[in-house]
Length: 438
Image (cartoon, rainbow, N blue to C red):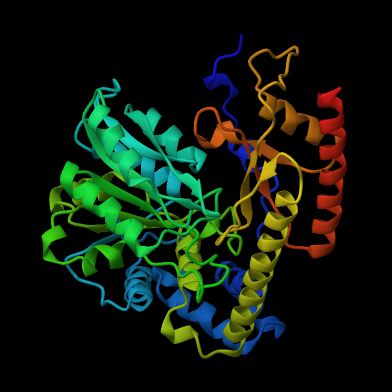
């Protein structure tokens, strides 16, 4: 019989169906940084050429192949600081600490072993949410910690944080717990925490002396900021006042995880508050910062003030807003579609381009086949992929609540393709039900 661990999918599996949008603006600037000779072709807009020249001037010898500071290029670091202050409406504090890493997984690989209690024997625990971005759990376990799950609740049409459930898990834990991971916005659920929920998390962290790891990778993928805004954990913590000054917070943003990001541009910024200088110095020594081109990419995505007046940037902004509006509209359509089908419930996403729909098949339905370790939800997902071109991933790979059955669906942004996909799904679902009830 296959073990639970051996069934865990590779990144190419759990990310099935993921799509990202490529912007000419981003690629043109980066192309000119790599091959500045193209400026002479007169095929690139003047403002794009000027921006590429500015980026080159940040490098020794005007070369993107030059060495840069261990924590990252100072201009990119300044862009990050400016962005954080602008986003939170609270100036960046020089006592805070910023560094750039070569992607989220790389950052976690180097940061987790620095935590107290990392003995490689699972004697200390780390709280991870369910559902969760799969590499988070993998990183925790590879670092030698025990991954302890706390689960979100589906209530009143949204995914919510369960304060009582988390407190009970901490009290019952057989090992000391060092930190808590928080996804906001959530993946694959698309939820966004409100201020009260984040304040509860911070109170738990203070009471139990937990370091907060805030995964805020989809903060630019908000469907309707007026209705459901993104509020950072940093902003919430600072507004709670001096009583919570002791809480240690590590905030992560990885733009290539976004639907408006380039998946291969692995770059993450880490913003630390309350971390000791010795610990941060050790992180800088251990963590590999990304190539210069990825740091330019981070700068472009965070849109510093000096580039926002150009015509090309305004076109980029309009295109980006159009895509996010479309994603929000399609997210509502997808949730309504799944809710119209028997035996499926779906919470409407507020960010990102995935839904985590629940299968509510009768308990009398069972699957018996050659893979006896496979569940009915896995069988359903595999049958769908065998019968159609639609890709979904079983919820067990995202640390769903034990006993529940879900699937992750990444919806296409092309509305014609979406309708074709949903039509295939509906036909399969009806056929599957007829097969099971015989």
